[in-house]
Length: 424
Ligand SMILES: *Cc1c(COP(=O)(O)O)cnc(C)c1O
Image (cartoon, rainbow, N blue to C red; front, top):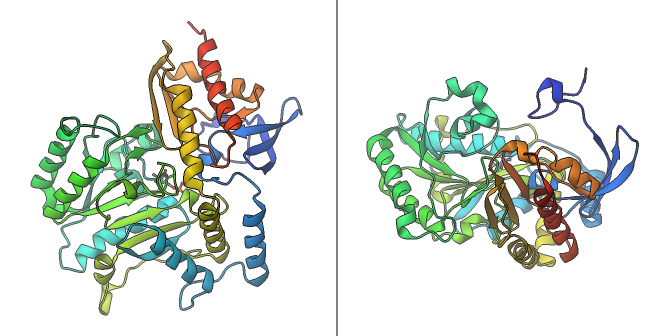
């Protein structure tokens, strides 16, 4: 029996076929455990969408090594340090105007927990203790810790805990994709309004994965919905939280999904690509209005403090990652990748394919039954590509350093697999 416990896997599926030896650029070098064959695989999923520079980037490595020779870690309790101060400054500079304060933590899920706790305590500090529940979108995914699970709505991930999820209202997902019309989003807005009208006295915040629902099924929706939803939230004294753990740092074609919208959310969470995929870290950012809600002595202080918050190695990795983004004009790279995805998939049709969604540097192919994707990983391996289909989705969320040829190779591998399946 395996001593190592792997994620999202039943005990009888703990066997692994591929052992990663190293990574370089957009490739992972793996050893096939059964055959001992060694091979480079072009990575289509960038390690759950975080390794945006690919692997083993020499500039990232240097930045971390330099910091390592100074100090690897020190607490932010009673102390401060340059990497954390600089990263806070930089994040305030590059995120939408209005997000002026940064709370660090060690993973996306914890960043979400921090955001939810902030929203609750913001109202507690005003004497509004009853505003303690949340609204989120159906099929949302916000992480695996308890409150993050609860604002999520995905039985595939958290079915075992469904009976404990009682405090969240799930709003309809807006229809019509990114370019939805007013009519397309009307139903979802109406539903949101009904929840707010009836329950806003008990609700602290509406949390969303802005524009792109990731792990819950790669659904894309319109910024118009968010603009209207924000107005409703303001009207009902409910905060708006953007979980940009997946969408942040270019995935949607702009630096942040919030850049597609006309307003600045009250709280925003960054994770995954924050450190260029090097070290787990997250940032929960707020407006000054929220920050000021914690001013004043007594018990107004925000009671949270992860041991590794603001870890210096993570902070220098994030700073270098953002520098590479700017220096190498990643947004133009992302737009090229997106264009290739469109060219390769816009007219691709197949009887097994239900829907194809392309948005920024993401393409998701939804098939009718998960069975259809069973052989996809092995097929891709044989072509020198790493894919990780889950459920009914086969998707690409690659690093941004791909060449045109590499981007096409990822697309073609998927198209070839789907064209050649004949399981019926
Ligand atoms: C991955 C993800 C999280 C959780 O981040 P972890 O670092 O895995 O804890 C939260 N929200 C969204 C939208 C994510 O994609």
